[in-house]
Amino acid sequence: MRPRYPHEPHRTASPLELFFDLVFVVAVSTAAGQLHHELAAGHPVEGVSMYLMVFFGIWWAWMNFAWFATSFGTDDWLYRVLTIVQMGGVLVLAAGIGPAFHHHDFTVLVLAYVVMRVAMIVQWLRASGASDATRRTARLYALGIAIAQLLWIAFLFVPAEAQMVVFIVLALVEIAVPVVAELRGQTPWHPHHITERYGLFTLIVLGESLLASSNAIIGAIEKVDALGPLISIAVLTLVATAALWWIYFWPPHHRAIFTLRRSLRYGYTHYLIFAAAAAFSAGVEVEIDRLTGASELDGVAASFTVSVPIAVFLLAVWFVAIRDNADRVVNTVVPLGALLVLFDPILPLSVTLTALILVAIVVVLVLRPPVAARR
Image (cartoon, rainbow, N blue to C red; front, side, top):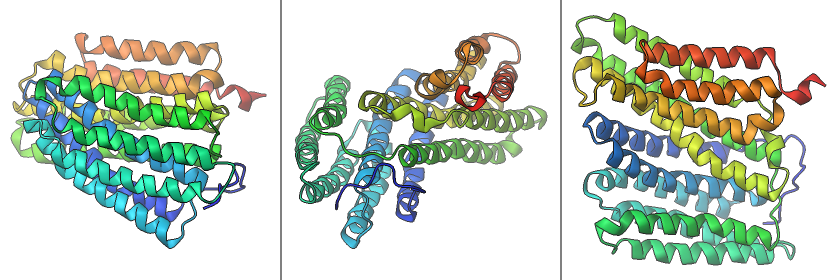
């Protein structure tokens, strides 16, 4: 398991990596579905808090594997088996999301997460024995992950009223492991490969928005008196999702991770990008519930469940990828668009206006290509 060459030509996502991503569709869908139910029931604060906690486990397990694979992906039999073990952990984690939301019972979720992370410990120990250059870094990763898992097991015995605070502390411990390890010696990430992996996961969460909203629309057809509003939401959801896709893939992402600091910023900010994209689907479902009378939220609150995820997505993508590749016009239009989207729910035709704002941003991006591309 020697380190991969960071400038390997024609490096793309492997079939195993694509297979690995598929199981996360289940976890993302389950988390977004539970968020939808909490929002529709009129529990936005509790629902969002629990969603962010659950999504951290999904995102962190995926991200750790992605960065390890870009540096040490050997695709031998043991590497494949350990990857499949992690996939099994993701599926079990998805089964534990419901109890976490409804009963604050994190037992299944934490144990599944620990299984995935133990598999990563084995991977890092394998990597530590293959190269002198990365041995110390790989062992620090293994040690840091092991300590974190012991703390997560202890988390199961924390009283419910203290869970949020303890969770934040443990999440900070987890995200500190790569910082400490990489400062002792950097692993050789492949810029094109790792940003392609992020792009593929973004497609997964955006696809979840389309799937969830489509299923909700199909289920609501017989519950509404007029199809016009339902068709409008369907069209606007497609337009908004397509615009988010266009905006995300406008900049050359591989330019964003040429240093350790920028790669950490890129990777960690994607928590907001992924979580917001998946939460967008929950917001669309809440809007549909409002039409059918199945939501406890009023019109303004329901609109915020759509506008807030979109605004977070726009600002996060702008911060890590667009900002350094755009001129003054684009760097004004994208943040301004995110701000206008947040004001959207208090205006007439809120969802329609959000879609129009996103289309306007796309038009500007088409007219103003990335700075380097114009040179």
